[in-house]
Length: 157
Length: 104
Image (cartoon, rainbow over all chains, first blue to last red; front, top):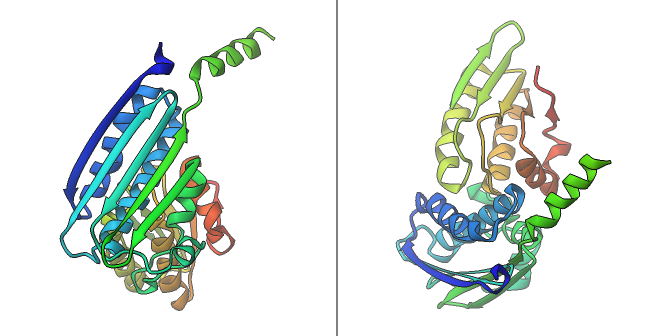
C-alpha cells in the first residue's frame, strides 16, 4: 500500500539566511516518510539548501522577499518546488554551468545548480527575468526492503 | 568554532562545530581570517568531525581561506570529512589544492 501513498506540503518564509537550515530540515522531515537512506536524505537537504540560498542571494539579492516551497510525494518519488518572486535569471544556460557565478565577490563557488543536478534525478528551472524563478527537483527514493534483503544475503553467505 | 595554534609546528587547527551553509559562512570566514592573519601559520588544518552538513557555500569558504593563508605563505588541509561532504568537495575540484588528510 505504501507505494500508492500521496502527500503534499507547502511552506512560505522570508528570505533570511537563518531560514536556510529551517527549509532543508523541514523538507528532509517531510521526505522521511519515504524511508530514505542517510545518504539520500543528505542529498535532498543539500539540494534544498542550494536552491533556497539562490533565492536569497540571487533572487532577492539579500533584500526581503518570500520564498515558497511545495513538496509532493507520489509512489517512491519526492518532488520539490522552490520559488521566489525576485530578479529572475537572465541566462539559465549560463547559470547552470559548473563554476559559473554572477557573484564571485561573495566567495560563491558556482556549484549550486551542478550540485542540485547531481544529487537529484531531475532539475527543472523556470525563470522570467524581473518576475522570479522556480526550481523543480525530483528524486526517486529506492525501497529499503531490498537493501535489507541484500544485507541478510551477504550475512548468510 | 574552536581554534588552537601550535607554535612549534606553526600549525593552526580550526574545528568547525556547526553546519556550513550561506548563513554560517559569513561568521566562520571572519573568525578564521582573523586567526590566520594573527598567527600567520605554515599550515591551517580544518577539522570537519563536528560538521554534519555542508552545501556549496563551504567550497567558496574553504577556497577563500586558502587564499588568505596562501598570501601569508601557508597551506590548507582538511580532516575528518564525512562522505556526504567529501562528495561536494570532489565535485568542485577543490581537493587538488586543499587535500583531505588522515587525522593525526
